[in-house]
Length: 448
Ligand code: TRP
Image (cartoon, rainbow, N blue to C red; front, side, top):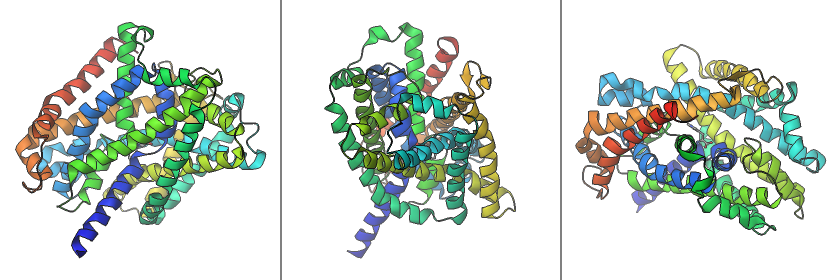
């Protein structure tokens, strides 16, 4: 009796930790606006296809590699083959890239919480966001506060406590999101938004190059949202007991992450159409629409403040695990203490984050290839570093390690039936790496 109970609670804790890392700004802030700028339902369709073809096999592979190796990402990969440590190393670069724009958005969220309290949120209309985010100094101050909070938690090493809190706050966030979603869906004209989100209109996507652009964005979003290709889940997998069920954990994490992203889409896109805004408004979308929705509700001030507080919390649980990836590596490689490592890495991220923040509006010259720095950093991490990391994880699992050994790990040496073995083998060896390669190559030549 005792052992089964223990196993269940550790599995629950693991799912919460993995979901806490996966669920963050990627679901609440990024998913709705990327869907909005990429044709809505066509994006959603590709997103779901990529979840199946890339998300499931790569997430499962990462967990299996981690549990088999029982060590950090790089050493677990090395244990499979000493030359393959690099496959786990993408996390360091990826985490830095993600964090440098994540901290900027985290700062905006803090600003919105405080403004909801201070002014009842009455001034938070669409112009407020563009006005605020393009000021030079002020957003940097909020970025600093977000980064300092992340650093403080990581330096203290109190991740355990955070996990416990997230088991409580995650369900509250879900309840809030469902409430906002229902409210949005009942706004006049909301149906247009629903249609935009779930009925694909291939005529509107801009031909082949448009399709490739949407595919690249959908792939990037799958990697970003599930925290894939960065070795995070290898590390999490290494903490798993040998008798845990990898396949059902994979499916549960993906289902939770996707449910939150979809709820965010249904909360925001109908409101966008109801208020006559454009769905392709870009990265300010959630900040420009939700406050307007809240201002129409009874008790909207409270809802706004509470909602942005929950968003902040989801963002912090992700940013902590991102910073942790780099800090753990720095601690292993240098003689720095944990606190100093956290502080130094945070200062570096903040410095890069300042440029990202300024590039949003105050200093538009800060751009690379037609993207401002803020967009460029996320382009690098979600569309290059993470997919490349995922590509090598597939090759490592499917070809270097080999399906029989991977299966041995996934099935707990035959104790659990692994029904999808053939499907897993086909996706991890052929479909996923080829899909990543094709999207890469066609987007270099075909689209932007
Ligand atoms: N998945 C997180 C989100 O949706 C962001 C993220 C990307 C992440 N890669 C990660 C978090 C690696 C932790 C580790 O917001």
